[in-house]
Length: 199
Image (cartoon, rainbow, N blue to C red):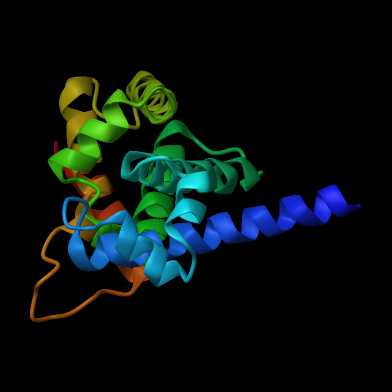
């Protein structure tokens, strides 16, 4: 029982450190954030931070992994069988909505320093490869059943798809302000469908 309570407390503290890191990354960016600031923001000592995360890179990996795991969990919870195109649209909708809900768009995850970390770290690289394999499989299946035009280039469709996933990161300083997560997700899916329909 004591071990279980200790483990729960450790997990809660880890989550608090991640939440503080998320805030700092949103405010300052990766390069400007220091572990000293993180410890102060989380209300813990610097050694406590290092007992959970040995470097800033580990924080980014933990946050990105959590985001990808949440997304996979939501998709697994969908029990209705759908066509390949519908599965692509559901995935796109979920990714856009979750980014806005978690304010992952504000963390600038598309910036080169984050991208390099995510592409080179074995855990996140494997998750990215798994997601890409699923997306490519769904694109090819949608072409095979005629949901995506047969003359469409799968590589171009996948690049356009990934560009739409980054939609929450575009126009962040717009005078129109921050969009509603559900509305933006619906709009992005509509754009994807329309683009396919119009060739």
